[in-house]
Length: 207
Image (cartoon, rainbow, N blue to C red; front, side, top):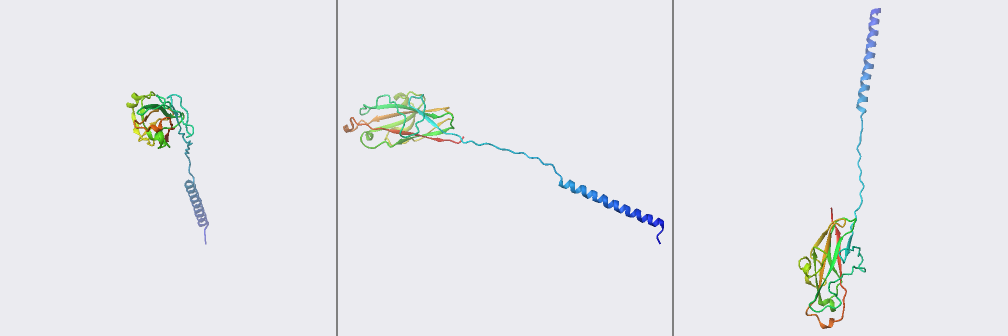
């Protein structure tokens, strides 16, 4: 039979076990909360992208720059000696200046001949193009320039090199064009005329 003492001991033992279980539950509960809880922070970044613009403009006088983007509305070159009365062996010179517009990104230029013709007066004409330091295009400045189209080339000849133009009108390429009527020109071309058209093709460059 259980004595009062043994009963009290049994109650105390059960009480300890219950407290131990509750304490364990509390420990487990704290451990679970610590595993799930965490602080969070974020950093975000963004950027806006805008495409640049590439645009070149030209001037036949070295100062008045405007766009001549259409084949049907080219800039009219002003030759030193009037090209309406050329004699065999004579050479005449004209300036054409090109730069980027403002605003515009940088690029390169390529001189091209456009449908120059191969018969009549066109067959008796030869030309060359050089870049020069200033805007005075004469036999003297031409001689000191850098070749773009070799001297005495047929009219269909394109430029052999490209020229660099800085962004936002920061630099200018001055072309000096020399056109010659060959000394052996057929007398049949007297009084005839031909229109020569050239293209300066601009290409944007990667900054």
